[in-house]
Image (cartoon, rainbow, N blue to C red):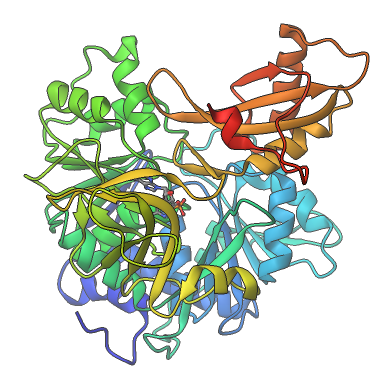
Length: 533
Ligand code: 3UK
């Protein structure tokens, strides 16, 4: 596929549908609201005009800390239409995490869901030059609404440093405009933050052309997504996986996407499947496993129109795929993608599923497995996975060393260990760093160790991945207590609560083992591989 040189992704993904006569078709369905393609185009163009009106210039960053609603998409493409660079961030993070990303990205404008404002506010207050803030209410949000509007439309002075605006008022007060930023296919269009094993998250920069390439290669190529599909992704839009599933792919073919702002519990997901009857469902392994294990959902039928489900984020256990198939009669396609590659580049196919593997390369991508000397590893032998394709991030923002370590000309080093069998199927064999995937989201063991060490009862700690009953990895901590401290169930619970108060919830250690010392190398490095055994 060729993306023209003069290209703005917002025109391709939003305006094109109105031009092609799809204006009255539903683009998004969510609790309490539906959005047609014409409405999406109208709102996107108002958001673009509002972003310009608020003084944001071409190439400046706009942060999105938003729950999944159609507003997310209007803001994402509104920013792109204005030539600004949207940066969606994980909504499960802490004030500390947001403080870093706000400074690192130098976002001049932030869109935040009302329910997330409390976590963001202290980070904003700390900034020397605070960005403008636009608060977005969830259509079905029932919490307190304490914003009283002052004289100018939608403006309310909440603190001395931050002028906060209310999204609906901004949209209503702004006229749609034909103006589109004259970008090229090679302009940086959006960033996505990815966490590494050491140090702070890195902003992976993606280009205008990347969304269209991902949609053509995986959305249409692998899933065969069409205009009459109804897609539901339980994986959220802030995650590259959810962004592709729930926004990029359906919007590329003029399909309908079902959005759910709330937490994707098995019950909420099952309810959404039954109510909206999607043809394509997208989840992570932890969700599939917990939906299958939930006794209160044992009789739930899901969607009668489902034709395929997909899984990514971490390896899908063989038995999870098989149980799902036995119960719902359709397959789960496991595929591996990454924030750096934007979406899935190695995947199982419709009619060609081998559970326990990540399938074969998605046409349009090349992958190679190399040994420690950089030579191609023969079939059956484990090596490092590299990938090449048209959606690869161009670099991490402001991170020269980390960029050099990951991006090598057209090739991207994934950090994953893989084996290819004689039939050409690829099987995941672990990470080459210590990073863990928990519920499909990165957890750095160092971060959990640092949080534990801040507790006065802890001398030192080591964190490794440990499979739970479903074969899915969760953090497990080995803790050496400070002198005079005695390990007990109570102390373990206290340490778990302590980590939860410091870090995003999903990062806490599910098991805590008290030990008298940690295995270390002569140079004092913790030998995590010994603890994993
Ligand atoms: C791991 C998998 C085994 C692997 C992602 C689909 O997960 C995504 O992006 P992230 O940047 O993490 C990337 C890393 O996650 N991984 C992902 N999928 C699988 N391991 N089997 C899998 N099926 O370590 C990879 O390097 O958070 C997934 C689409 C877009 C994405 N960003």
